Amino acid sequence: MIPASVGFQCPQCVREGQASVRGVRRGSGLRSAGRRWGTVTLTLIAANVAMFVVTAVSAVAAGASPLDNWRSPVFDGLSQWPYGVILFGEWWRVVTGAFLHIGPVHLAMNMFALLLFGSELERQLGRWRYLTLYLLSALGGAVAIQLLGDPRVPVAGASAAIYGLMGALGVLLLVQKQDLRGLLTLLAINIVISFLPGISLLGHLGGLVAGALTAAVLVLTRGRRPLQIGALASLGLALLVVALTVPTVVVFSL
Image (cartoon, rainbow, N blue to C red):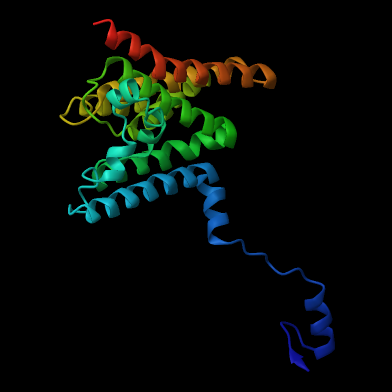
């Protein structure tokens, strides 16, 4: 017999009772983190961190410190260099530059912001709309740099996507009639920081505008999936065309 809370039970009764009770299913750590923070958000963080590691290793191979990851051939080949896009047809730079950071502090600050804002936006918008928002925000920053930035200076444009998330969150809070003061204060502080040397204010503002515009499209086309897909695709195509073609006209007309 086996002692129970009240009296005793026979071993066979205990075994039969345990067999009828479902065990608690424990999800993996990755699955739990994905449910809490968002699968797309964690994937984007992993992609940014992996790119930083690659550039850091490349910097070491080139004889520089891993903390000076921008002194690497990989960084040189992927950063957004307007002249590279305009004169040499290196179109990929308007995309790959959005996953580059200058130093570990830049990376840590952006990844914290991505975790904070991204997880909330992924929860509200869903995975694919949120991923589209992120990419269009990054592309908006690239457009601003191509149009108005110094074409001789390579740029790491990862912050543009983060500013796009803040712009999108502002639109959603406005639509939901929630308090914007906290977000506006944080945004104002970040814009002031953007005036410091080595930071691309243009990329930040371009990402902010593109993110707000993307969120507006999502709100206005809510419940009309074909129209929403068409509007987002048109916006993305327009940004890409401007980034790759309009600067050529500007440069050669000077």
